Length: 321
Image (cartoon, rainbow, N blue to C red):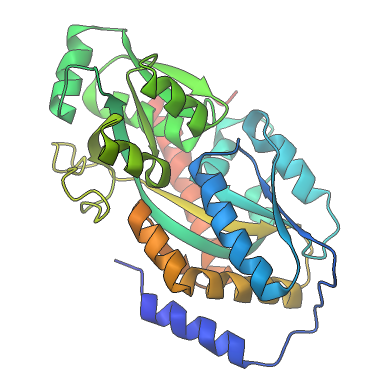
């Protein structure tokens, strides 16, 4: 496992011990843009981090939801902002995979300034509690017995990481599914709880309490090992799909051209936020691992993830729209 809580805690303490950076955010609030609706995992994570960053930087860090097709309103808001660190972008894996799924997409995530990765964890496959299955194998059998009737909700819409996880399920199982797009995962979860769709892939933060309460069936996580947050839920690998491994992540980006001292100060606030004991405990409860790390490492990871999902899109035969 790549996470080293001691390492990023020490990094945060070291950062706190250095002289203050030249950047002074004054009294102007920092806007943390989220490209999906309130209530989803990205929004939940943003609000946790925004509160900590606000206390550290001494200015309000306000979460603003800018929803819209393919994260374009959020991208536009951040790209066109003044490069002074007062507008930042909380992204998830879905934000990254939108790019290869779109023809002539107006934005390139690699051109935004990486601040730091916040947290990372697997996706989880859940099903409505009234579906007559208890395992992934039974879900596959149900899908094959009811061809074209098994519906998967995809938070973030067509081409999102959750949508591609459903497509990967189709590829690996041979089950024909109906991939139902939603603006956000919270909307898909509402329909799953209401029995209007059969299953969905989602990030763990929102799904963990639903699985524990019995609101949905937790069938499998997409990591190599089981999640401590849901130790009774097997992995997709344990469920018989050896090449089914995928991760969600959250991280912060800034407007292109934001000066390095500004990025450094924002990164320092993120490092301290993800090292805070209550944040670590909250992330662990949600099945997510705090990351931190350098801006350069986050930029490299984004480029690699972009390449990985581009290959999945090609394998699935999905034509960029």
